[in-house]
Image (cartoon, rainbow, N blue to C red):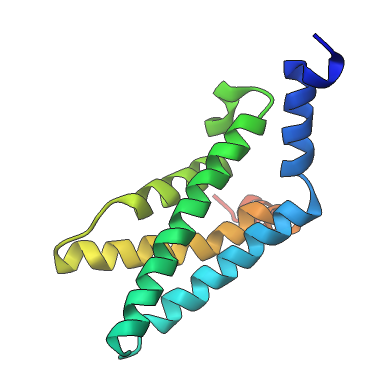
Length: 141
């Protein structure tokens, strides 16, 4: 087996992609698009626009699912992936967004979860993560 095709080389390539500025920029862009979609849904809109936003919301949710799976695949130690609070938060928000909703209370919960997707910016941008972690450590107990 050539070094380019070894599992280690494949893992290193996944890791390089996951930590690249382009990948992080795309994820941030989709998070912002998600926020705009959520905001637009708060207005009374024509049925065609509502349907388009619904399709876009589904596509965004699927993107986030693939992104989490990709990050998991790029994780050096799989069993530690969910020990990181930010990875756990991201996963719970994305999985929660996948649950179909029928009644009005569940719809409100679903909207709240989708708003939390915007907070995923904190887990994607290392500087924001550092800031939040520092603020949490500074809170007296």
